[in-house]
Length: 542
Image (cartoon, rainbow, N blue to C red; front, side, top):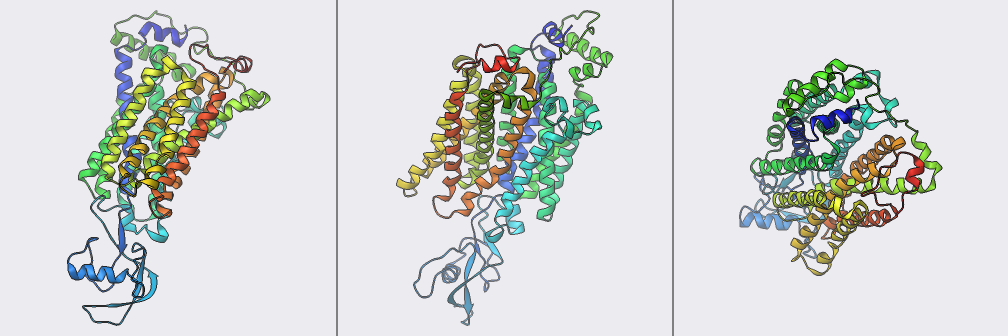
């Protein structure tokens, strides 16, 4: 009896599968919390050089008339009376009275700053002085977090899930470890690293911790998701793959609410991380993967899990279920076989490009939300609503209008929204900043939908004999996109003026439009059988 036959006997989505699925969706909330938390912990508030002649120059706004005059004098040319950038440079001071210091017409870089605490409070940036010539430290830290996602895909995800492309990179321990063990390793690393992040004292320690957090996030998500959905019947797998993403969105909302009330980054990091210790209880709550147990011929343990599920679902299973080739293994071919078929080469690179762009858009737009202007808390809350709308649209439309049309539409519309942000800047004179924010957040909703679609669409386009290896390659392209996304978001800090915040949007939007247009060469898969061989895949028509 095949495992799929046992699932049919249990019921496609009975009480046991529902409990297990939602139990294993909960850790995804923490992944959303830790990813979006960097928007607040690495927030860059407005700042200016501190006045060397004022001992109590501790507030960004002027404390009185004399303080206002001193600020104006320090950042205004004594010759042409023009203002200059007060965030990194201050005019050299020359002898004057205590009440009225005098400044030369030459500037120097400052070594201490006064920050506007109204939006963020204390952050890593304000504590470590990551501004001016050190402003790229924020992007480096976020890059290391995303690099952790890439490394975690190799180190903490079971080989059977990332498949033959990277199997050789695993140690014998990784190959013999079950999904439950890898989940517990990931959860332990997640709890330790997220809590430790609240106590770092340097860029080196923070970067190392962030990399560990990224590794643990992808390990927790991948291993819990596989166990949660592998006993779900085919008729429910699409929506279970999308609903789990809403838990990530819930995490982003939770951390936004907490950050609104907790403006100290160390306290915020602790509050968002200490609850991860509860996930250690999953050692007693989470079963091992029955498919993995069967692959290791540990039939008695698998039988106990299946019969417990049958008892909860009030169904019965036959006495002798474990006979023959239960896993229905199919012959796998190496990924390089794709390159023998030009049509598959083009199709693969289009899909890989879409994965790459979807990841850049998802993380780049999320990290750029603090640079849009307005309240970062309001922006993130609205972004969460657009994400929910994106997920819901996939649930409603994927099986109605098809994968190809839907993917092309959301990519092109999302890219158009992002690139259209240039119009309010050109013609609004600052009065239409709300429109810039609205277009960016709507674009984020579209890119979320594209991520949902590309997972399903790719699995239906690649033939069975190379599907797992091709999806592993696509996943790596996505992680590379996520790794460079902080640098795209940081363009808002590098480019001065009103155009700074929209440069990342234009870059991401242009890439999304290109990806959507490229996807037009792909064939539709709705209501078509999955291709098993490369020949069948080549015969799929646009």
